[in-house]
Image (tube, rainbow, N blue to C red; front, side, top):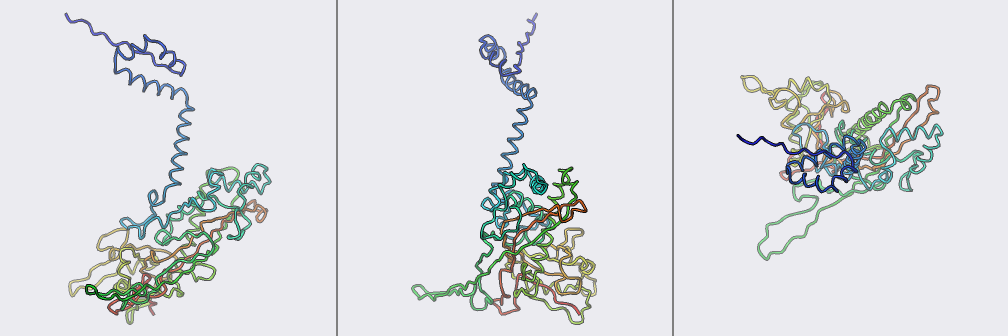
Length: 457
């Protein structure tokens, strides 16, 4: 008759540091731990950790807080291109290396006060409490009062921490059209020159003056050099203004933070986009489709073409005027009222019908024409006007970002309505990177990264 199975002795799991110390000092219990059932040692360690963690929730809280702190530091210190991608159309590659659009700059003026506030609501409430003569808020905000020096004119407000500024712009990138695809230049002062190639033709040289020769061994070389010019970016002031009910500020931190984190960034992105597309260059950026952009080219409309139409021949002509090097980055931007014309656009094919070119024959969004994405916006002219649909490469558009924001509040302006007025100021500029269309090597029609269809009359 087989001997009965003897179950290994189960160990009592310590539930505190004192009980663990007592067990470690008991030779008999430790011998049982290592010799009676060797599988129990791993189980003992795991169970002890779980027992103590369940019993002392402060450990879990410490772990959670430390994890959040480390992750926040990691996200702030690493470049945007490794962590955040702008909201482009599916399959649409970034037009340029994403580091050019990195948002958080640890060297920006506001970076030195990054640790003063828990978030946007905390920051804007501190400004509001200051106006309420709150002593604690006054002592706190005095440490970060508008740290502007002689290179930045005072706005009479308070410097926004760099982490908050970066977060505001990150949300703006999700809705913006031009900034995520443009070449963003950080500005350490209000006026920054940027080099540009002074080129108008590739017929006899490239890059404004470089000529290459086939030369025999030992033959003399012909000297040549590129011609450079400068584009000067001068930060312009963009002001965002809104009025907030005092109850929202004082009673609802969640609602107030949601308001600040969404409304302000989307407003900034909207007005930036409008200026980068249509700006006159006077007190604001010079837009890529404004008449002041001397590199902009217009493809002629068809003879007798009705005013409120877009035809396939318009698309063909615009595509043919784009710089070949930009075809992999260029996008179509169009007024939403062009959609009916684009959706019914076709090319007659003999007597057998027509071919639909929108979306390359694939139904449903996202829309594309000739493999390049189409973005509809209300910031371009209406159907039939020059610029109602354009083919552009935003990688040839420079955005100068001063990377400084300031904010201020006033409970007095709308005192009778129990509202507090908030104002955020950023400084930014924008200009096309080239100053004229390029004549190609073959002497054909000029090419440009900014192409539109002319007005149809």
